[in-house]
Image 1 (tube, rainbow, N blue to C red):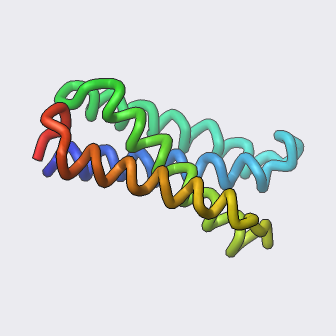
Image 2 (image 1 turned 180 degrees about the vertical axis):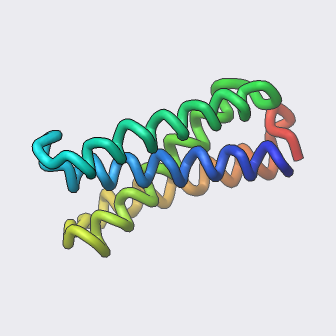
Length: 110
């Protein structure tokens, strides 16, 4: 369970970094740019801790999949970026894939 907490913190840091990347306006604003570097550094460090226990394919699938979905939600809420139906369905499939990994894979610690 601790590994999942570390992984979810890595996802949160990556999500913060990606949101700051949008806010940095192509690294033309100092503080959002600093936040990008710090948040991605924290995210990769936490990701490396999760890799001590879980296989890289599983960790990366969960990290990137949940990151995609969270960034899409933040893009909608913060930046007013809308998604069409195929994009929403695709993200739903990503979430289904993460659930299959978590619930049924022996490669994922339960």
